[in-house]
Length: 136
Image (cartoon, rainbow, N blue to C red; front, side):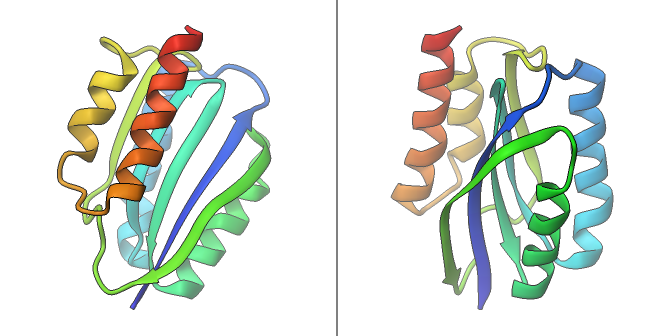
């Protein structure tokens, strides 16, 4: 069984495209050795992230994120145990605002979540992207 956790948080200040890429690179470098996979979407001044993996590793990762000075108002939206991961590889989507991105966030996120089988999980990310695009 894997812990699957989705959280949303707010940026303390806008981050640059280089910072977005650094976040993704750090995730891709650090999380595989912890057994963590997931999906990170950045839109406007918000982060929406799925973390999946061993319970202790996911909880430790979330604790690190809670103490990251780039975030505040972190809220866990969903937390459950699952037999299979929905995102076995790391992915990231972003839109102008906190980070620069190509095209509408909704289009990017639709591609990222296409392999996800769980309708509720997919809807969390596509709904987030739609709201961020409307706010832009």
